[in-house]
Image (cartoon, rainbow, N blue to C red):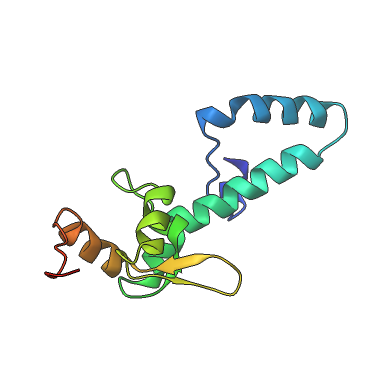
Length: 121
């Protein structure tokens, strides 16, 4: 709540990060704030990509695949669809795959359709 009051986006620490969070808190209590700072910074960055960027970008704007993750499509599933050419996406020179909400919707609509090989292939 303190970060939100200061104008920062909310930070969500997931249950699977509980052990790392508790260890970072113990280190912070001992005067070493590095681990806690890193954990909070990474969580803030992930949440920006997950919640803020897609809403600001609009449906056709390219955003990192991490920003397009839903309950239906994990990051791994979107990356695999991108690599296989099933999802319209591009990999930047930084190695990050980017796509759009519009492309994900198109993938959703066609992902269960069978691909047929041309005769003689």
